Image 1 (cartoon, rainbow, N blue to C red):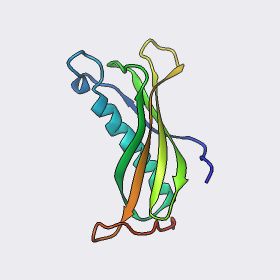
Image 2: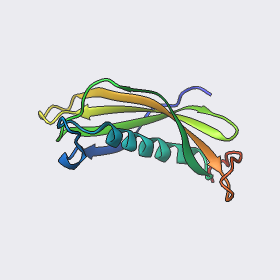
Image 3: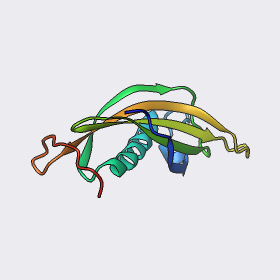
Image 4: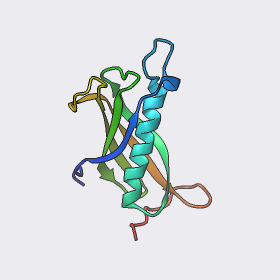
Length: 127
């Protein structure tokens, strides 16, 4: 399946409580936002319960600073029988007041549909 057009999924301002020891945004916080964005996008392709099973090709290009507006875009890379792979691009609008977006992070998130027994099941099409 060809990659879908990317969708704006999350916009959030980076806050001081999520910084690392160096004062930049903690990488785990950014990954958490990416996982949420990927899951929101994946849910549009299935009514199945999905869980994250893998993160591939995660790259931190530039730091995120307190006050930056973090913008997560998502697109579908692949839909399989039980899984869906979502590409997440993270951009920031720096707090300097310009609206220009700059890419800071990217990665692919793999979600698998599971049943009540928490075992993989075929993806159910959306209603």
